[in-house]
Image (cartoon, rainbow, N blue to C red; front, side, top):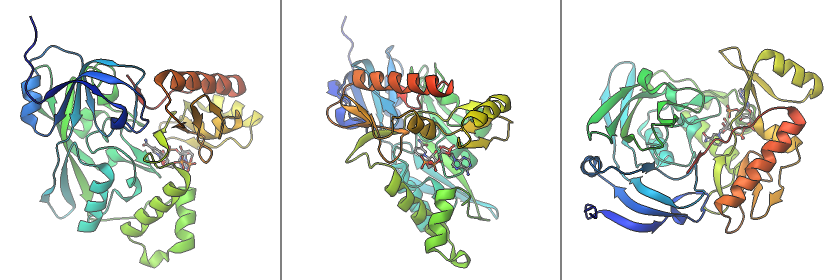
Length: 344
Ligand code: NAP
């Protein structure tokens, strides 16, 4: 018996223009979601699901035989305020950068280090986006998500989201992969006492050159982040990419010590939990992959951590380069790199 889908569900939709890496793939079913009711109407259907935001952290390795829920729920609003903070809510389909810019324009600082990160507000908690020494989880207050098994709308606190380094409850298998929870809106807590966070070398250098510290504002920090990012990271509109393609490996102190003895220039960053963060981009560069291509894809010439689709690449091309880079880093450093995007 054929399934009777609601009118807003489309069949056999190409996804090339819906991810920033622009790999060719088709989804059997597709729904643009602009209201919670649509998610609740779809909850009763037993089908494989995937929640798509801005498509900036997704590698499509082939066609998808399920239902793609393309999040388009909008709206930005100040929901409350106390003497310590502003509480700001945004729909999951809002463009992350536009949302950050809007908070700054309203005079609510706190998210400035995260400007220009591609993607949507709803995707931000999934991998706990971070940049220049700030993680989204630090400004997060709560979110709403529809449980796609029951259609119920649930609220999640910060603790329940289990934020970790570029990770959360929603990134773990069984949560996002089957579209178990579709995030519909996110609320941020932006403290009224603001201090610039500018300890990352690139950012500090940019501000030293252009800004007098006594005049520094969140807008100035945001502008500096934008300049640094535009210099170093490719614009997905012109050079198709999925941002950082590998996670920075975390190793124990002994391993970091041994590596440092062999590679004295290796950047290492001690973490609060005692592990040591290694810079994956530096290792990829040393392994000879900066600016080097394999078929239609390559590692970016200005930042070796970013994989570029030069021209009409396929998921197969991406997987071949992924394997080649991992193998060379493993051979050179004995360290296993893990990809950062989600593979479908
Ligand atoms: P970078 O400045 O060349 O630094 C290389 C790596 O070293 C970064 O991955 C960064 O780790 C780490 N690092 C640098 N200075 C550090 C410090 N003072 N303390 C601790 N760790 C430090 O990095 P980049 O490629 O130009 O990227 C700049 C920032 O944008 C990074 O924070 C990066 O994570 C962020 N970014 C985020 C995304 C995303 O969320 N998807 C995508 C692209 C870039 P961290 O990555 O842990 O910061």
